[in-house]
Image 1 (cartoon, rainbow, N blue to C red):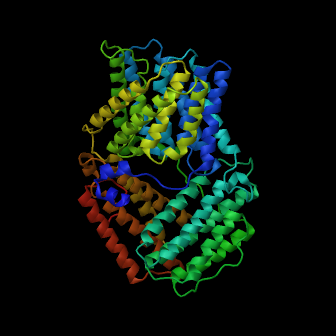
Image 2: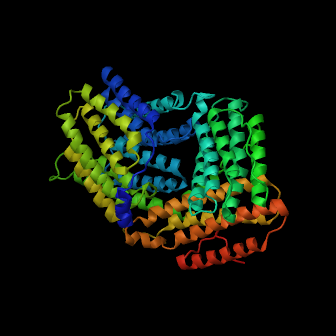
Image 3: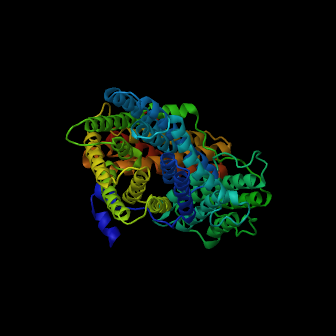
Length: 618
């Protein structure tokens, strides 16, 4: 009933009510409880509560980034933003001393432009940009007795403590094999399960959704294996085994996609093999006997060959290492300086700079009263304005509701809890709730509000629930206005830039297959990049479609183009498998390619896309 009601609502309102689902991440809950609370307790005991506040704030931000995945991936996902936050805190502390309001506003606006542009490079860069701006605002505005270098060091200690817990503590299901690689094993096993799920759905209406789920599983496994090695040398048997088993899944995924494209139903024998391989990955065992499908058609023969290859890899533990997504510094610079980066940067700079200016004006006004926490307003703006965190109105509604709820809950708790012991316990409880609350922005905001207000009181300041609500509502109003102002260039540039990147990846994959090259490793790498960029583009399009109509109209038609590109990549995969088997394409393959290229060109014209990179007919 609830889902039907949500689907009937306008997209901009439905998104605000939609929450992620899944099992409770108990290991992350334990880490959250052991992170900020104990650090704050130690700081209070040794008489340095202000440094404990900074360290706990860093642990909270790291906890928001502590998502499911492998240990090696967490090093970059938690470490890079923490370094950026510490740098912002250090710069904010020294730049904020003796700097006038006008200069402060100009400096922070320029930093917002840089951090916003960097955010277009990916989720880790986005988190780093967010913490850089938050750290800069907190460093300039938080009244602390310690010098900047001590504040930055405390920030690194807080985030580093959570990262150390992530690397050291085992997680559920980690008893098979080397416990350090449990996240990687689960990610690779999920790929084989997703292959089995796609094979089950061949010939049904669920095939498209299952293929998308396979792409998501491959993306997750690719990220899980892409971090730093957990041993000094790559000779670890567990390392080699994981890389080989991920690589062995690529031809299986290719064959399953080709079978889904053909649309002919399969027997149970064809679907059982990948799930047996998934169980072997989870148990860190050999493959054992695998049921072989019949070899009546090219895609089935490719599936059988891929299963035989996987069985050999599982037994020997050797194979190609194809897990890395190779993105050079030039690629990241192009993303930052491109259309999407410029749009992100301008929007963040406008809102962040306006937030700083408004906060400084209120700080020195006669009617507003004492304004010790002026940095709250620009720091709140950062979380509201980032386009990659969700649709604008959805973020604003969730932030306002979550802040009011969190402030009321804290006011009730502060009236009865002993100080500082009760407040430290409240911080520990909030840290434990963050991994669950991240499923919905309003819930996350409520938990963070309780934690931040508790930190304010531990630091020796009075209860500030009313001030927190006022600052948040001001930030929400500011971002709503600034977020809908006209900007230089074409609106929706971030989505269009992603679509052009996905089109370029699809074109490179198609050209490689049509060239007749027998370099399958290169083909699988190109195929992975094509599907991955398309998945990222679909996410950006979905967020843009959930904006208010005034913003959503700027990306109309892009979803249709992305769907055509996905069908083109599916068809290219089917062509690759058929070329491997017979060396030539059937009329069905060539006809479908021509139809999709023409459909793509029509979609480009309707959507007003002029960016290079998209394949064109002819």
